[in-house]
Image (cartoon, rainbow, N blue to C red; front, side, top):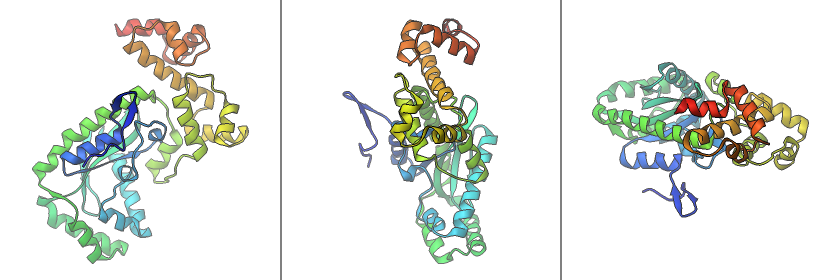
Length: 313
């Protein structure tokens, strides 16, 4: 049953969030949905926040495998390989993991940069049950996972026919399109988070430091105010020197450059979707004045805001 927990309310409107959309897909199709956030972008926006079960595979079999170091390590390597394959494919693809469970995958990009991989499935395919059971048993023998417990957990997982599995192709495309819309509305385009991305694609997983995650959330929410690095340091509880170093290392750009990028992303959306004057957009996106806005926009995109708008006409 769908719940209202993931909903964000804007006035009297109920806003569909990514987590809510995952729940909707899971309610109408026999699949589990999750997002491997390679860049940390989903930690700064309420519309993108996900429950733990939507951030990783969480079937009984997956939980069993992750409870033991050897199979947990194998699952991580399997995810790295699947992420790389999804990015190379540049579209919808599918595959079966070492535990005999199948998923659809879709590479998520922002500004030409791969920032995440969607997964939809975590199912057994009826036509491949014998093959995938043998694959699971081979993995149990190699990794030391108890075969009886693994088979029991595997058999408790949803089984679908190939025809039913094929329905996941359209569903994951719909999720991807929905996510693209949220990213655009949140103004998150082109935030590179290079360190996070490199870590996930090489298997060296780590989370954003709490003070960086909190800082990014503040920046994405209050980009239209005169934010200063020293004020933000106090709010996230760290010294200016440590904040500056860790921010650049984690995000891949300085605090100032990142804030300007957030503001420019939002300004591009307003230029495309509204008839607001350039001066009004400058004020709404946190720039000191129209001149500062125009200079920053031209440096980033090679055109003034007015020229950019004319090109879209």
